[in-house]
Image (cartoon, rainbow, N blue to C red; front, side, top):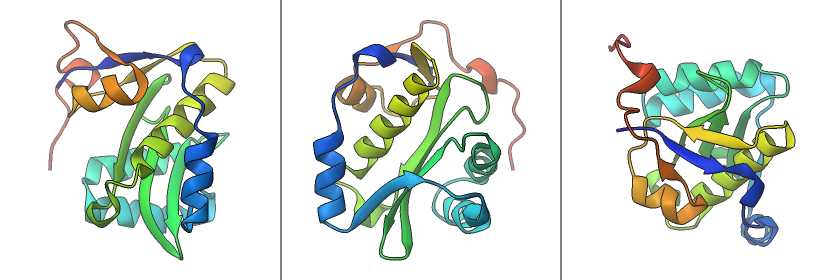
Length: 157
């Protein structure tokens, strides 16, 4: 699992996708600091403890660098950037029951656009599990020799 690089100055317009999801009752928005525990607990329960830690870190950034997908009163997805390293996108995930609705793509594009708005020209997508997804979703390219990258020697539970 290596890293990938994406140009932030050449992203597709995602307003129509976000509007479609909103019409279906799914809100894509920045997390609020008082929601940190709820979101981190959801990430821990649905994904990995390390991702919950990165999510908490992203919520403490200014501006908050964690976006959530909310349906009703339930978290159904999240995406972070500038969590472990500045200029890095990730982690992100969508609940299995909510997949195939392009919620992940909306979270990805919203996060990448936020990074661009903060002055980044490129983003690194760290420790990618599906290169094919990122190539298709945002034109990312693999970074040669980036495995295991910054996560080398990381403690595991």
